[in-house]
Image (cartoon, rainbow, N blue to C red; front, top):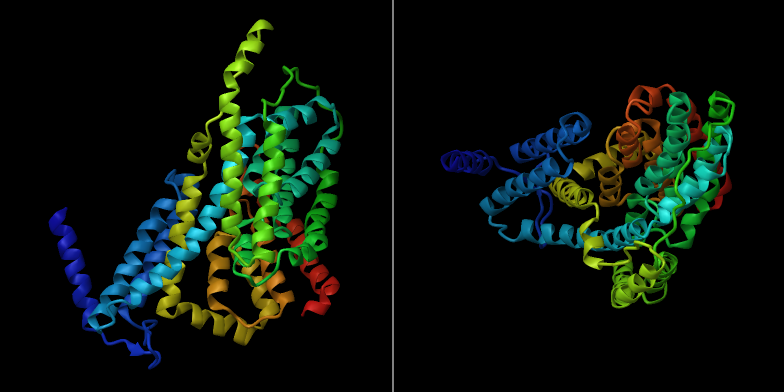
Length: 471
């Protein structure tokens, strides 16, 4: 294995070293154009192979972070070899550091949000919501609308993956014996969760990326509320007639009571969001700093819960209760979606490497120079239904096309809701295929893709119409 590694890097150095790249400019950094160089061909091939492996995660059972993290390392090694060969020993290093900075800001922001969500989940906040819905005895059609609307308004605060899983659990508890109801309700939940995430800076990673980049301010995102509603309502109204009539039997379950501190954590999460927004809007500090400050709120509250834990257990013992109210903040942090965070790292460095080579400039010229911004941004949404929206949006941000505010909102909308066109187009869809296995499937979702596409088109038209002054 050691000899094989030596042969690989030696041959790579020889191939890359004897091919002459073109100097893109004569500035201080003197970037090399590697688009038509073996380094470029190797890098784009490695990225495509890695992404094919990501897309096959459902079948290969290999977590999506593994191939992109490896691909990121290979791409930057290739770039560094070429630059070092031409005397630019620190150019690749400086570019990687810039990519790492962008990743670090987003990772720390997401880590805090995930920690709060995990804390609320452990305190049974989502389970209590599920029990409340199940116990109401709604009809199938009422449950279809309730879960969809709740997903639409919960996902702007919680991420679309958590929202979809909670709502899917409700649907499964109510109608597990009715595959038709479960399947169509899951489609509705995926569309609603993705639509809800599009009009909030906290609702989806793509909106968070645009906000942290400073392109769109916090309150401007809410201009997408009505287009997002249209994206959800158009397919939901058409699917309504396919939802079976009747009322399911209410399942018998023990009452779910939230653990001590759940409501306080909800308040602290809201306060953390306010802190992040205030840091960014008024102090011009990175939102990540506000979120990390908010993590301290949760840490201090966790300390209070631990210190008072024994007293609560002693009081409950008198009533013959077995209540576990212990709280460990680091256990909540460890339960963050590390695969997603590492996938995010791999994607940013891969796309950053391809941009450094020159491919993103070429794509920007084609899409935004020849196609036009509206068509290009609409295509971004369709592409995000096949390829994850994170690399697509990061690529657009790296291209930095000169667009008015309305067009930036359009690409934010399309990248967010475009993933609803296919079940594999968003984390919510992929997760529900596993959670409701056999009832919510790729082809079951595909059957309703034309209806979802109507909502997609209607949301774009609605945005262009009601936000015309921004174009």
